[in-house]
Image 1: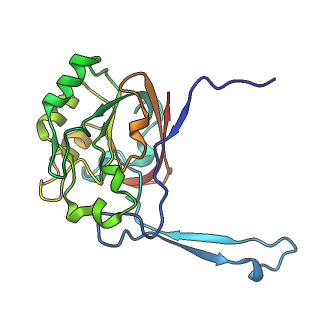
Image 2: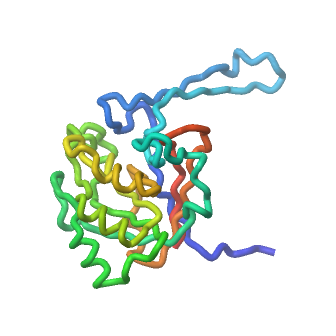
Length: 230
């Protein structure tokens, strides 16, 4: 008997390579062969690989401990308690964004007026359109100038008691901002997912997201497999 899965699955995760965009000029990711087929002494030959990488690479999650000493690390985030599986809303601001755009409180209020008030423990995903530059790492990084989120918008998200946010840029904060969005959200125990892919394939309301970080003990960041369920 064939069971029909009741959702369309959308992969919201970028592939990574040594050429992937990163916060620094060199993203720091590398993978290599530890043992290759010809080196394998068993009858069945294997290629065994290893990676060297910062944990904040590609589509990844920031845990509260990323900038809050003593706060929850990646393995402290529980699938159910921290709503890593939860309802998702997509706020699309791509029609008005440029590299200096900051998502405003009004953008969120306009979304709520058109669709629905943000629900408690929802995952709020912002689509700026910046992901179109992902294949061009220099442009995507853009000297760390890219669409971001304003402090007032972050404060409204906390008032709505959301579970976490995602964005299709390197960060919800720019490098010259002092990282207030990170501080506000992570201090409140929320999670942040950066470098989200394919967000434009999600509807504004009605979808779910499932975020599965690597379960690395004491990690403050982790690559994440982010799945949209529509």
